[in-house]
Length: 230
Image 1 (cartoon, rainbow, N blue to C red):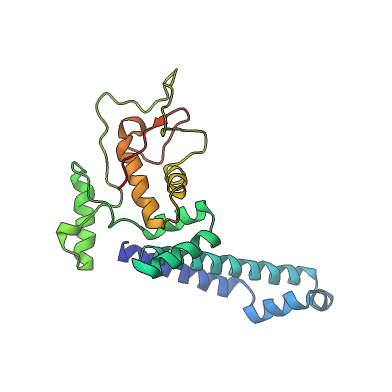
Image 2: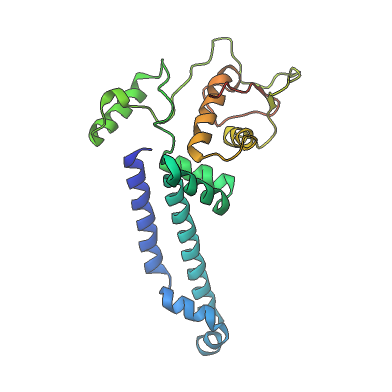
């Protein structure tokens, strides 16, 4: 994962904690209000009780998000620690939250090789960031390698989509590559967030002529071929 992105996310969480410290009652006061709500409502009024409860909920949401980011970073580690973090992550966060945390931390960026033909601007920008971090230029990988679809490719939904064959996936409204790849990996047993990120990239490469240059834009009716994962 990108060290700079990890540091930036940690700083962002610290800033949010600072804002909550300023805008919400202190945690000991909020906990006391949670334990004795009627006493606080009688002495200070129901509006003060609501303020304490809202502050406590805000801190709980912050702690849940911080734990999710920590486990997402740990899931990218090799060995037993990565597997433990990945298992805990699947139990604590739904798929959508895991995907958002992985994007925020840049998990999986060093797993897939760079794609030939990526725009020079993106490669140069990634190389500059890695140089600032002390990473050799040969290992620089852009955040999202760009795949140029064939000139005859069309991302529009055809009037009459062809019938899918065994193993192919027909895109439904609300589908995304992350969930498609995650469901396929679930058939083979436990998996990590990093493995899902690698599978997403493989699905995109295998269907660049259908999806087009934006992997986040799937259209209902598109038929996606499964990639040849190792």
